[in-house]
Amino acid sequence: MLTTILAFVAAILILVSLHEFGHYLVARLCGVKVVRFSVGFGKPFFKKKRGDTEWCLAPIPLGGYVKMVDTREGSVAEEDLPYAFDKQHPAKRIAIVVAGPLTNLILAVLLYGLSFSLGVTELRPFVGTVEPASIAARAGFVPGDKILSVNGKPVSDWADARNEMVLNLESSEVKVAVQTASGQTAARNINIAGTPEADQVIKQQGYIGLMPWKITNTLGEVVAGSPADKAGLKAGDTLLAADGRAIHSWSEWAVLFRNSPGKKMNIEYRRAGQVAETQVRPNSEELPDGTLVGKVGVAPSDDKAWHEMITHRYTPSVGEAFQMGWNKTVNYSVMTVKFFGKLVTGQASLRHISGPVTIADIAGKTAAHGFQSYVEFLALVSISLGIMNLLPVPVLDGGHLVYYAAEWIRGKPLSERIQAIGLRFGLAVMLLMMMVAFFNDITRLFG
Image (cartoon, rainbow, N blue to C red; front, side):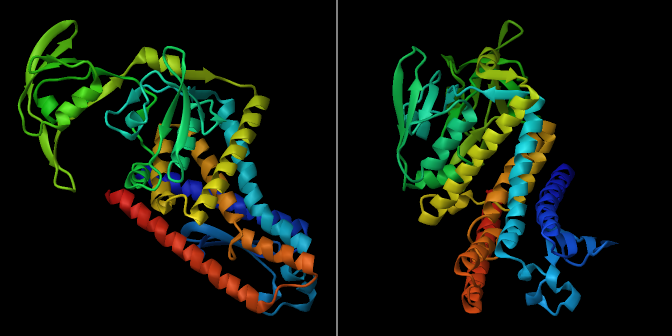
């Protein structure tokens, strides 16, 4: 919990501070007087005056702001009028407004470049495991498939393949071209658009029954105090048969345990080359729909040879690393813009929207996983922050950009009435998005 909180607060401080510093720096370059630079909202608990600017830290670490001299926000001393934000040419105001989001996008390139320069580990787009009766199984995926393209777009690694499939399955049929284990080209089509299954996939964070890992019948973990632990099973044991019937795949074992709540079974297993037997009675667990399922408290280990085959590790040069960082930022930026477009047109579920609780959870997990994972998490959130702020919604930087661009074209500002209507619309949209984000966070937390 402490790691999660610290990782989340550090992420907000870094991303928000640099976003606002982008506004601050360009404002000063454009001759605008900055009165306050604040990281966090609420009453500041730290203040330091340097030059004309008061630098502050406030207790609510969910944002920040740069306060500039502006006649629309109150009286301004006559000597400060030339330095007021609203008295500047529209081109200068556009530059100041755009600077924050662009800083986030530049930061993403630098963070990705830093991470990649330390070494890159990619998962080749191979299918290792297909869950029985899953969406992927019905689409025809089989272990050994190599994903070549999704809806005609070539993919080079597992992450790209997964993202392309998940982000398109709500709105249309997803056509996946694969190369089978025998070397032939085949098609796997996922068609669940407009069905409850599509919504379920979002609840399950994009899981459709596919995994790159190939798992074995050898136990990788046995939960302490579980039925398996009480039966004497240990990590490293290989499961062979149940009640005299040989079982060859982990998916079959998973189905057997799940469908046998409270039923005693004779399990044959191998340990250190010796075959032994024991008895296991899965615990009964009731699902929300009243169905009873069995749980024995074990997890499988992955196939190490397969793991080595699909894992590509290399260390690019510094120049290559930052070029990769640029490409990754561009690709994710385009993907994010397309996602917002699908949200507006109703082709993507609102369940995709995440709030601070989910972001904090991911921050903690990536921080626990290692420095590179956390740095790439910061880069991804920085892209989201930059693109979101460029949306043409009043109260966001993109909304102000639209106002100032219109003023530049027209030669005069939009009427106060139109700006007020836009402001109310923007506030309503942001309030709605915040409510949806918190609802999704709570649903994920308790689901």
